[in-house]
Length: 171
Image (tube, rainbow, N blue to C red; front, side, top):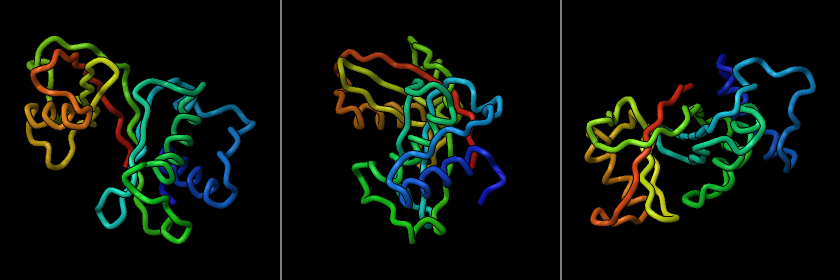
């Protein structure tokens, strides 16, 4: 296990789910202060340096960050439509990262972006594309926007709204 409590939580939640078929119960003792806040989060799982699952929430869906991370870890390992569900045998070979998101901030201009510092959400109607910041293979704001538009199936000619966010990344 990791020495990072965010990573530990993600690993243990997925392991518990794979063993018991359900989400672990929130601890009865008071949560550590960082886990009490309400924030969106993303849990990414890699195997051998390759993405194995990534699911997250832009804004909080649960009462606290502990629940947010636990649920997102389980979804990243079992519900990411791009990958088959993680097996118990794979667990020792997986690397987890957890990104805790700041609230979304609407922006009016690309000059307010920095692909190394800010994540991006592009929305048009009920479609949206999301990209975390500081990702390998995303060297520029233009590429960040292009990827978000493609993920959201939004044509660059359409009217769309952009939001930026910061992350607290735990590896």
